[in-house]
Structure formats: structure tokens, C-alpha cells
Length: 183
Image (cartoon, rainbow, N blue to C red; front, side, top):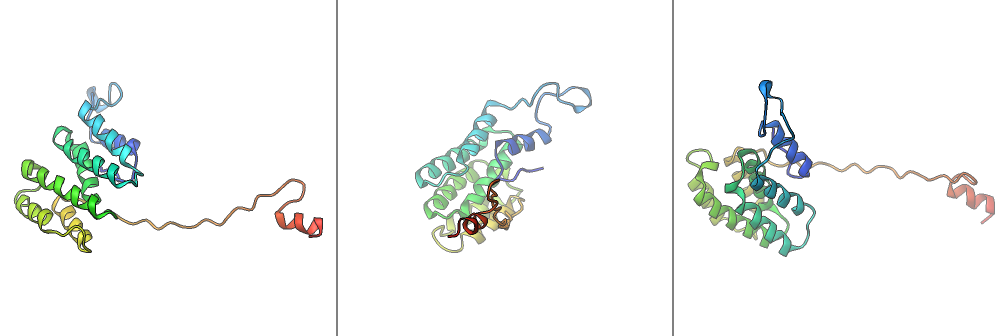
């Protein structure tokens, strides 16, 4: 099971726990709480701190740190961070997209094992050949997600909830107050 990149550190920890990483006893039940390597903990912390950032400088730093930590993490955490980095290739800031693509290009050259056999050259060419300032960023991102065997992100519709009218115990609603007072 993979965690949604939009989820927090708890979702990530649950995803890592579901993969069986940790100290176990007979029957597969964990003997103690999830034992995650320090590099995994650091990578998950960087990812959780990156959520909600809107400043381009901080986004550039967290994107670079996230990709730099990929070789040192366990496979479940690496897959989670890799997917979130790939999704970042369609970020609203072009500088963030370009920096993430550059970092992922370097990672692809040095860690071809993360890709299915034969896709490393194609992924590297796509990362270098795409103009990340343009409109084809989402198409390139989706192609890279497919190369890494990830599902593309889904957009969830936000349903507006009707406002709840607060009632005062003395007058009821605001309309009742206005009518009572004669305004």
C-alpha cells in the first residue's frame, strides 16, 4: 500500500508499517513500535515539513533535500518520496519544477535501480528534454509516473458545506433578533 503524498507523517508511518518494515516476532506481529532507520525518519520529517509551504525558496530546499535523501532510505519510504517528488514536477512554480527535475535527473543517473529495466535512459531524456516552464509539464510528469509504475494523482472535488446558522438562546437567529428589536 502506498500513502497519498497529500497525507501527513502519520499516513506515511502507516504506509511504512503496512509494508512490514520493523522489528517482528513469530506470526509477523511487531514486538515493539515501528523501528524505522534514522535516514527514513529524517526523510519522513523533511516530507512532513514540506507540506503546506508556499515560499519558493523553502520549496526549492525541501525538494532538493527530499531527492538527496532517496538513496539512503528503505524501499517503502523511497517509493513514497519518489512519488511525491515526481508529483512536484507539476507544481505551480516553474522554478520548483525545474529544480526538482534537475535533482531527479541526477538521481536517475546514479540510481537506475529505482526504475523498471530499460526506462532509465527514457526517464533521463524526459527530465532533461522537457521545458518545465511550459504547459507540457503535467504530461511529462504523468509519463514519468507511468515509468516508475505510480498512479497519477487524483484531484478531489471539494464540496461546499452550507453554513450553519448559530442560534442565540435568547433570540434564536439573527433575523429573529432584528425582528424583535424592530430594526
